[in-house]
Image (cartoon, rainbow, N blue to C red; front, side, top):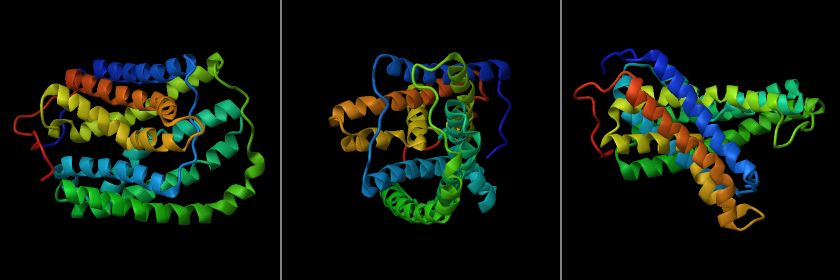
Length: 291
């Protein structure tokens, strides 16, 4: 693969990406303001495995689409790139910062980042190791399910190893000081920290945009779906909603505030990338299937 070219309009690209993040978050905020409740569910292990497998399948698609780029890099570099992609799209640092803003329990919020970072690291390493077995659509499904199961086991072990640490520092936890609608400084922090998933979406587009097949609309929709899948919100919306106190359709509506947020982020970021990014080099389009 040729070295990436510079964006055609870097300032407009940056501004458009920031705007994409702001619009995406506003969708979420507006749905909360309209009275759609924040979702709470208690899914069984198989549902969490299925959701994780969907996200892992999306990672495999990214690794396959960017195969020529990743082929030039060693295992560690590939794992670190996937780690950074998942870490940012899943708002890992943002979650810790917003927890600190809402509770003022900054120390416990920082310590609480250890476990999600460990989970994502496990997923990144296993995905890079397992993608070699993905040869087509069917093998992608089985590889994603198998890798998801191994990840679940690894995450359980990591959680057990970290449990004493979290219990030791449990006294640092603080209750929430604010609830929605949030005061200005909390809302401002929410919008500023939205830069993290924007960075993740940008990294995704840098890796796969010129390899996405189909028309412009198809590429925009594919990018949107990939962002939502990597975030892990697709399976959560349509599976976890069956394990809530309210009926499944109400649960889906509740979770959809995050689904629409990340679909919008992916779509608008891709629109900005198409308009102001490096563009697509001749002959760089991927075939229309994984076969």
